[in-house]
Length: 260
Image (cartoon, rainbow, N blue to C red):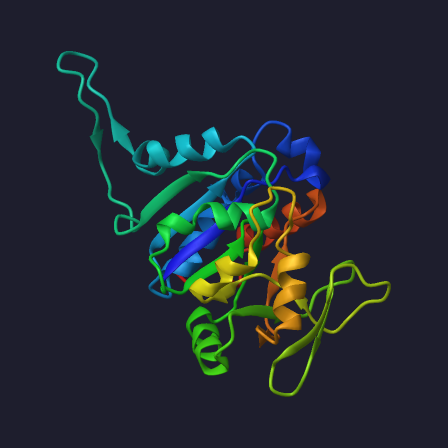
């Protein structure tokens, strides 16, 4: 399946870092968090990526345009001909990456809608945010999505507070999607979604619409929003403290998402 990753946000809660680069390019152990997310999906056999670019998207293009320069040791003869030699290979050589400009000011629903032409008609796809790491079993999530027969399956995770709450029944179906509840909830939307192609029918031609509002509410109303419950590791990177925490996990050699 193709993996659509939302990479266009400004990351205002990390302004000290994102003033100069997009949030998805903040490093964890020397590599952008975006790379870690892609690497994780790749471990489950999903190597076709569509990146929804926006704020400072050129920096993401530059990273992948010069991927070997950014990831390999290089020998450069200073005479003529001046041909660089890359001394090692990388394990991402089977990846394909589509870099799609979806508008600097667009909200999440419009960003996804903007890449519809890269998803063949009738083909399901994977969708996630570019700022969260997890140990979600991607392929088991896909199986749960197929079993449900619904348009969209989101990963329901246990977080700390401050996130939107989901009301889930015993079958995994979602009956409410409250973006910002007043009290903490057992489950929240952790991203790592699986979508039928019909998902595009819920995304209006309006750059101001957020995926987490009208589209999700309409999916709930149509009984087309399902969940895959995950009780293991999941952590966002919304603040400087969270960025530091993920880097500390990586430095300790105990990063739960590192399965490669």
